[in-house]
Length: 271
Image (cartoon, rainbow, N blue to C red; front, side, top):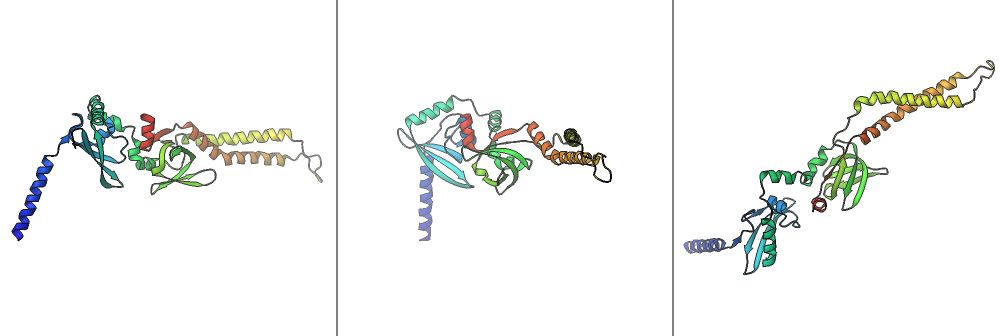
């Protein structure tokens, strides 16, 4: 009985191997071969709307019908989907791929240069913080504020009224400055300049004020202490706001970069 069971299993495996060997795998183009991988799909844009595409094979299912088995990956889990093509659709895809150049190593490198969405998490982690940024998220929504922190794929952004939390998966585009502190060597000079400006404003204010004289017992003696008090106040106010003004100016003077962080945004801007 045991030998009979083993014999049946062997026959079943043999039949499966024969069936698999007889499967008519179709080569869409010499540019891609028998299996279309993720790089070829991106380069030739064979199935651009298949999100999470990993690889695909085309099998002839009939005289004018083709079955496409697509392997996808989502949250590190793999699954398969089946698409059916008629002869016209197949021929259109074939012509589309045949007309394009071969996917070389150099062409692959050039293709991936603009696809920052493939490394979105690392891009956000490497942004100097805190700093002022401009976001485009959830399709068409825009948000401006200071990026405070990035944790568990959540961006914490301080706006004028509150702290907004944006999930990385909703992010389409971000504008930020790749480096901060470019003008820091000039900070002390700016503090001196702001103090001089505060002193100048105080002097202008003093010159427009009427002279105040002392009361008894030093009548007719000008109150010079009030003038000095206004001078000191002007210098102090200049120093108080100098840091914020310097940070704002250095931010405006530092060039910003805008990168795309979603495949949908990449598709809309490039195709």
